[in-house]
Length: 430
Image (cartoon, rainbow, N blue to C red):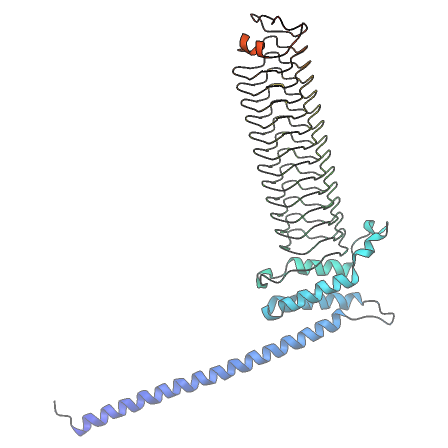
């Protein structure tokens, strides 16, 4: 097609219009960019101004150098708003607030005997409230709140987010931490006596040597927590989740652990004298050498649990589930094991003098060399149980189920041993 002058003119005109339009949009974009830069600079300037004003209020004092509480609280509130609005300034403000707590509520203040009965200072509580409800998702993995060795007694921290916080050696007696998030927190040697920790999240937290006497931990989440040598006397741990937790050497005397979840937990050499473990879940837990004298383990689930050399004198294990449990050399003198489930349990050389095993299920259990003098085995189920060299002097086996002559012949008894009907006393028993 032959191009005429009008056609060329129109095409050129269209191209010019397109270029002008693009140049116009480019100019608009340039203008928007500089406008945004001006807005950002203005905003940052405003934040800086707000910050300095907040700090001025936060540090306001009277003629005697004491904080002006009203201005002080206004400063805390202003800092919280800046931390919420400015991700860039969030962590700096958290450091300012925690630094103030360190300076004005150090651990040494807790040394006064009267101090724990007093309420926490208003400004300290206000700061803790701000910290607890902060925009914690602003924080980087290497940013950790530091409140170690501070006096935070009777603090109100319910539902707060304190994951990974350093609270080592802090004084938190009677503090309210219900439903708080303390996963992975450092609470080593912290004083939490009488603290309220119901439904608190403490998974993987470090509580080594922590003082938790009389603390309420019902329903708390302590999976994989570290509680080595922790002090938990008279604490309430009913329904607590302690799966895989390390409680080695911890003090749990007279502690309430009813229905607690302790599957795979480490309880070696733990002190559980008089503890209430009724219906507790202890499957595959390690209780080697643990002290459970007078403990209440009625209906507890102890399948495959390691109880070698544990001390269970006069403990209550009625209806407890001890299938395949490891009880070799365990001290069970005077223990109550009525109707307990001990199928396949290892009780070799266990000390069961005077124990009550009436109606217990001992099918396939290994009782080789066990000490059962004066034990009560009436109506016990002993099918396939190993009684080689077991000491049955003065024991009561009347009505025991499926006991064979060979089993009795392999055991050690005397003239006072009570045997099931149809079983002949071996001639060596005198």
